Image (cartoon, helix red, strand yellow):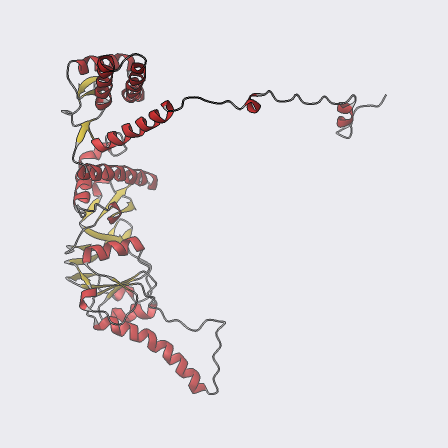
Length: 394
């Protein structure tokens, strides 16, 4: 975070990122269960960590404002059902002989939606969430019975609600049992900036969380989100692989020193050049770091070589003082798995190149292209005729 736009608030966001990763299932560490919501306005310090689920208020119909907006220990039902009055489509054909028969069809359409709403009411749920729309009829029905409802809930938000509350998504409104419902300690709809959010907190099976980011422009908040995503992945990697090495080129310089010593002592003749070339290639990392910081790369690399010969294995680039320091003591750490994967990939590429014994050139591709044919006499003059005035005839 020190190299990002949020470096001034690094301590604030560091705690938020660590809490977010630790709130996940430590055997899975699925970072998709960390929701990040962006709200323009306010300061970065106004950002929130929600140990539960928070998502933006969905589109609502008439009657929504009469619904209660806060509950204690409510029962929650999650649906993948459309609660909206639907008539037959335009291309449907219904033949009736009497008006009473048509009225029976209309009554049946109303009865279907009422049966669904009545079944949900009998479950005892106080919060009804659905991935599909919840129409004005259902909204007013639930408002009269002090039930909160929200339709068109995003799939990822619904997944996190189920994960934290213990609910399961139902594709029908019938046969919903107590085990299918979820719960939480508190539910509340709050105003944050210019947006209204639904908060589910104190969830019994909370293996998810939400980060609500505040800030100025949308581009700035988007950059903050990318920075936090990088930090989350690093913390996740550190938890999964609890071994670290010093950063700042310290690891690469130590491996380079070891390979040089190994080549001089145990590798005969021409094969030494292969090992030493690989060792020299590892020094590209600290050299590039120096170039990025505007330092004298040649001077710092010489000092790093001296430090590593003395046995200071964690000596790396000091970006604050333009020098060399013990980066392990300075808390400049990297997960060892990142270094292992990078070195393995480089080793495989090197072995692939070294396994090539001979190359064959395609003689046709090396042949010069045939020169273009010259234009016949007078072709240039004929081409100019008809453009503007053209050239006078002689």
